[in-house]
Amino acid sequence: MTQRIQTPHRRVFDFNTSDDGRVTTAEFKKSPGGFIGYWWTTGLNAANQLTLLGEFQIVWADDDEWPDSVAETIYNTHVRALASMASGVTGMVSLTSVFLPDFRASLLTEHLEQHKKIGNYSDEFDGLIGSIAKQYQLAVSLGASTSVEFLASWNEVPVSTIKKRLERARLEGLIPLRRPNGPSSGRDQGD
Image (tube, rainbow, N blue to C red; front, top):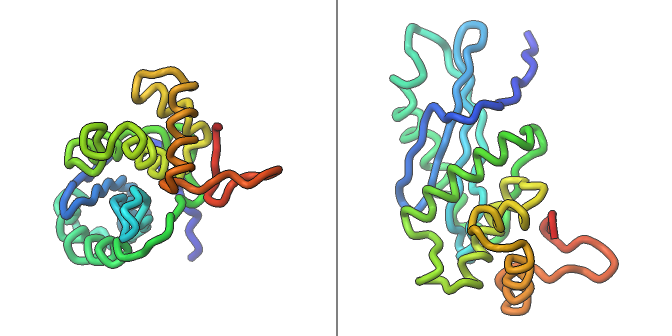
């Protein structure tokens, strides 16, 4: 039986953890005979970029096990190992286009909050330019269609401030330069 993918769209996550410098969230949905878990892990990669490390869809049989009772086991057994392996890459990874824009905003917000708490970016440690570069990397990897506007709101500064900081980040090599007469490598949305 072929099952159609259900697009997650809730703003509350069923599982959330931060460890080893990575943030993982998951949403669970009931399916015939079991559950589907949508998992997202973000963190710093080997190039010190804050990016999506893994996007997973895991299905398991019901067996009277509700997702919250097996989530930790699934995370420790499967998701954690794959995310750890993905941390070694040096390039940016992007979320697939299956997810809705309003869901991306809640996903991005949750991951920005957690990464700030665990110190993966900060104005004090990274400087204003380095901090906004990491936030932008995460926003782009999670598919934010208006990343500049989102980050302006998130940081409570004008859009022009974010644009100036991003230009400096480009000049410092923290994010890709924009190509003349076209989009930059790595989806520069919103600026």
